[in-house]
Amino acid sequence: MALTLLNIGILAIVAAFQAGALAITRASRTATATTVADKQMELFRAVSYGCVYENSPPANSTYTGDSAYDATFGITSGTSCSSPPPSASVTAAAADHHSYRTDTYVAWTCPGANPTGSGASPTCPSSTNGRPLKKVTVVVRDASGANFGRELVRESSTFDQAYG
Image 1 (cartoon, rainbow, N blue to C red):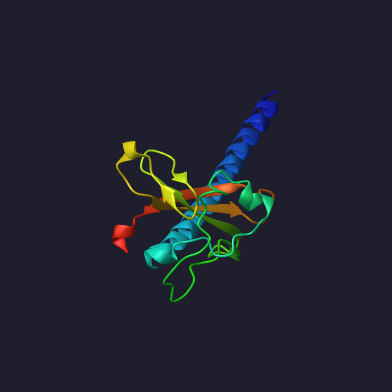
Image 2 (tube, rainbow, N blue to C red; image 1 turned 90 degrees about the vertical axis):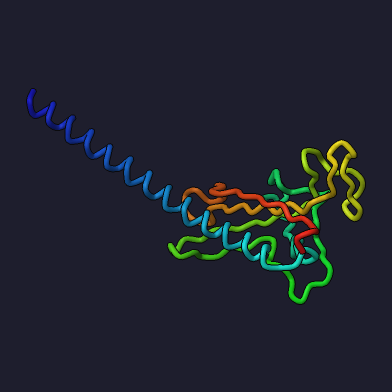
C-alpha cells in the first residue's frame, strides 16, 4: 500500500516537471516569434511611406485565409522606392534554430472605421475626420514540428503619410 502511494506521488511529480518543460518550450517559441515579428516591423519603419506595401504576396491559402488579408484594400505596389520592402512571406530559421513563417499584410485602414472607395483611391468616412492610413500586420507562424502552421504572434502598426 505504501509503495503504491509513493509510486503515485513520484508519477505526479514527473508529470508536473513534464508540464513545466512544455510550458517553457512554448514560452521560448513565442518569445523568439515576437523578436522575429518586431524585426520585420522595424524593416517597414525604416522605409519611406511610399515603400510600405506587400512585396510579392503569395496566393496560397495560409496567406489569403488570414483575417489580415484584404483583397480590396491590400497595397501591393509603392512609389519612390530606392529598394523594395521585405517580402510579404518568408520562412527562415531564427536564433533558436527553429523555422518560422513570417507573413506581412499591408492594407488601407481608417481611424475607427473601414475605408470606402477602391484600393487605388481609398477614402475615410467623414465621421472619422481622418485620412486613410497604411496598416501593417505581421503574423509569425510555426514552420516546423508538430505545431506546423500554428500562429504564434500577431502585431500591427499604422503608418501615416505625415511621417514620411
